[in-house]
Image 1: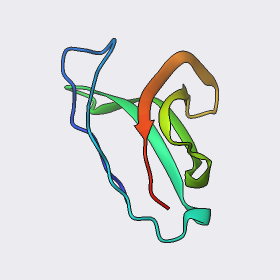
Image 2: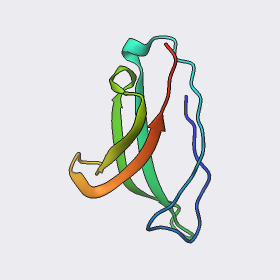
Image 3: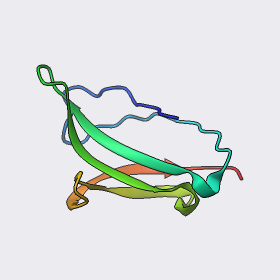
Image 4: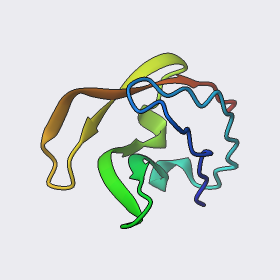
Amino acid sequence: MKQQSRVIKKNAFNPRWNETFTFVIQVPELALIRFVAENQGLIAGNEFLGQYTLPVLCMNRGYRRVPLFSKMGESLEPASLFIYVWYIR
C-alpha cells in the first residue's frame, strides 16, 4: 500500500508535513516501510533526494529520526526525516 504526503512549497530547508498515515498490516513479519524524499520539479518531474526502508517490526514507538540514503545505499548524513510512530498490535 502506498501513501503520499502533500507537497510543501517554498520550504526546502525544513519542511513540515504534520500528516498522519494509517496502515492495516496483515503479516507484520513480512511488512516493510519505505520513506522517500523527493523534490517536485517544474520541468523534469520529481527528483529523488533520499530514502530509508526498514521492517515494520523494527519500528519503535515515539519520536524517531529516519536517516536518508542515496539510491546506491550511501549515507546522505545529515539529511533525515523526523517522525512520530504509534501502533497497536
